[in-house]
Length: 64
Image (tube, rainbow, N blue to C red; front, top):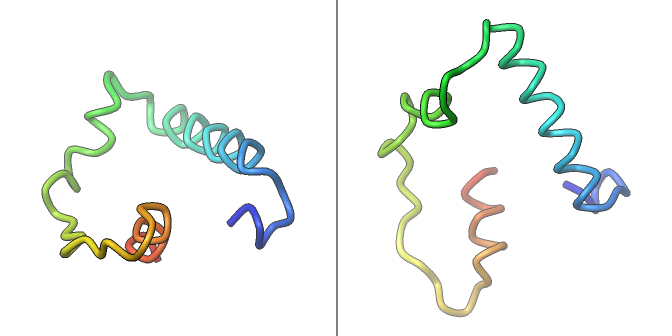
């Protein structure tokens, strides 16, 4: 995403955190980070790991 936007990874993370904070605030706040993820924990299947691919590439493909 950083490459596509022509931004640093740090910038992309900072912007994502700002958006997350705004979303949480608009929903009245959350007590714990777990509360934000409780509905998806255990739902995602990442399949078998491919040794020839990096973890970052696998994560990118999973998120796409």
